[in-house]
Length: 70
Image 1 (cartoon, one colour):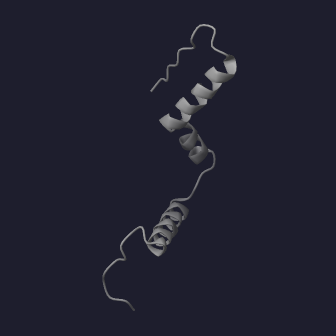
Image 2 (cartoon, rainbow, N blue to C red):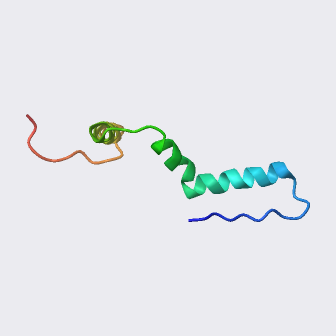
Image 3 (cartoon, rainbow, N blue to C red):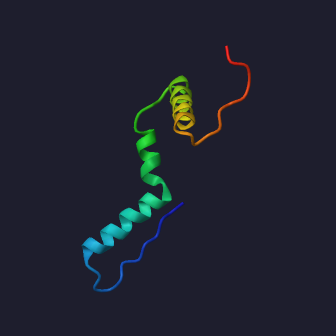
C-alpha cells in the first residue's frame, strides 16, 4: 500500500514533515514496524493479550466472564 503525500508549493519543510509523520501514524506503519522489530514468541503474545484482557476487566471496561469460580 503506497502512501502518497503532495508537498504544496512554498510550504515550510517542517510543516510537510509533520504532515508526513501524522500520515505514517494514521496508516499504522510505525506501529507495525515496532511490532516486527523483535520476534515475539506466540506464547508471550498470548500471555500479553491475556494480561491486557484482565487489566481491562479490573478497570471495568469489559464484563466479567460468567462461569464457575474455583
